[in-house]
Length: 317
Image (tube, rainbow, N blue to C red):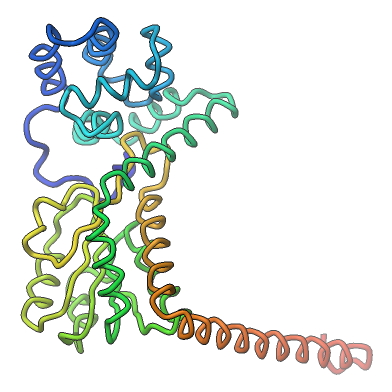
């Protein structure tokens, strides 16, 4: 979850993540191999700084490998190092002012360009690896089927979550699939829900914050029989029984990478899956787009040419 995210967890988190890490370390330390024990103790004693460190950097600090760092994180009960860092990051988000978090983020990455690039690329790799590790193949296949079989796909996202929602709503029509964006909050959301039917699918981009708009949207979807796909970082367990399919999209613990980064990659995978379901339809949509663009380019060139011909005679310009 991005430090600058507009989708912070409401109502705090369950307990204190740092205390939880400390408790996990203390309960498992005596049974760990020596190398993992050193990593666990380092994680416990440097909880505030490890959020900005890569597995390789932690390994170097302890004198072991990055694989041992990842293995230790899992032995402590986390799905991996990104999960451990997100747990610490949630507490930072709730307890620290945005300006302080920004400076911590910059200081954590370092000021040298190469160091910044390394940190950003490392976190991006961690997020994608964790997202696809957590992705249930049957859920992904089901989501592709829901998008491919829908009369219309409604993409919903608020704030920064609107970015992947808008991307989906723009790309699906290029594959010959009707889609539209709903990115309004408050009373304007009601207009976006008009006309929803049981043959439609709603794709909800909701990283971590459970908002009233999501409750209303899900209630209405159930009332008309529409299918729902939730793409989220941490709302899966809370909404699993209220949506048709949940797909994970791991977010940033540090804010080095954009909030919608994982969601956009998951969306790319969904779009490719939809295109594969009906290649002729996707090809026809792509060709139509190309033809329309060619017409627009030709008209633009004609206008520019007419303007150039008028200018020397003083009729324009």
